[in-house]
Amino acid sequence: MTIDLEQHIDANLIPILEKVHDPEIPVLSLMDMGVVRSAYLKDDVAYIKITPTYSGCPAMDVMGEDIIKAFADMNIEAKVSLVLSPAWTTDWITPKGRKALEEYGIAAPLEENADKEALLGNKKIVKCTNCGSTNTKLVSQFGSTACKALFQCEDCLEPFDYFKCLK
Amino acid sequence: MKNENLIQYIYGIADNALILGQRLSELCGHGPSLETDIALTNMALDLLGQTRSYYQYVARLTGDEKTEDDIAFLRIERQYKNVLLVEQPNRHFGYVITRQFFFDVFHLLLLQELQNSKDETLSAIAKKGIKEVSYHQRFSSDWMKRLGDGTEESHQKVQEAVDDLWRFTDELFHLTEDDKEAIETGIGIDVTNLKEKYNKKIKEILEEATLTIPEIKWFQKGGKQGIHSEHMGYLLADLQYMQRAYPNMVW
Image (tube, rainbow over all chains, first blue to last red; front, side, top):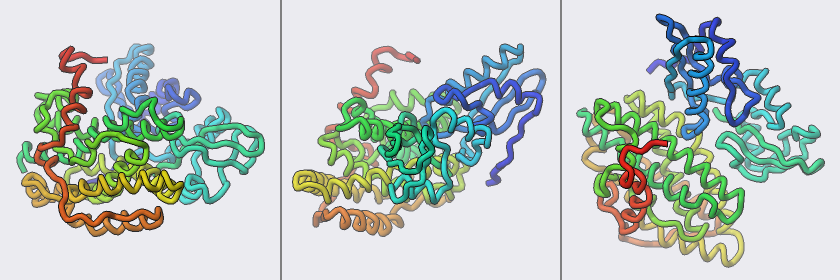
């Protein structure tokens, strides 16, 4: 099986796709999330393929509807389909997206090995989004959505979400 | 391989995710603490998400004669091919965790093999699922250790759960006729090969948790043939109620 790791996105469609945001993390556009795998126009119809972050992520259905609406606003008909392979990874979140996450109060995912250490509570490496301290502790491996874990800063006491590394 | 065999093979995997997902969803709002409540329902969500991917594939294999909802909600008990382990009811938290742990270890081993399936869709679903199930296993293993090596009461309760649920684990490694056919075509996984690794992992965690595996010679089986325990009917009554009462409803 050949796995196509490249995104194939018609540059003209990017401004429209950038208007669509993750309904649960509104600071991230779908482009920042890296969930759009291909987008092209054929016979005046936009064909968009997105990949789910987590299998059961309820935001995917909403994203699909929001894409159709964003294109409809430009008088373009859009057809959205879901692809499972290659599986989404947090590496696809863009640098702009990571910055937006941090500003919004969600710690961006660490590298895979560091993430494991953090989630097992072995090392204090997740940075508090409020004061920047790494004196933080894991409260729960599962947070308010499937993609996040819950942390608390032991210096400023701020509770915050950490976007789990997914590879 | 005929479509019907492939469909049955997929049910053997997907129905476990659906039924365990349903059991975990029952705990929504009833977890012992906010964090564990959220964790259990997060895992339910992952499992139901995986179920949807499998059932959408089955729907395509039926030539769109059926939808994913028909497959989830409108089969009768004998047509569900999940193992008995996952349909066992929620009792106390230690029981839920033990059931989860016994299944997670198997589930991860299965998906790690299934990602090499010749069937591209199953391989893609497995690759996605591995990432999620690794988290589940980490969570349930962690709690086995906390409860087993915790207080006298938590130790006793979780040991009782191990003693009660261990008899359902052997069925995980049984092969049905559909499994055998799927293995021959390079689509299916020979689960008998996973047993050794499974036992090793279970033993390792239980030892750390100061828990012991009961010595029993007779194991329960039947789910893979559609012969379920008495709990399954009640579970399906809950699961199917809306579609049965209001056919074709959507939300």
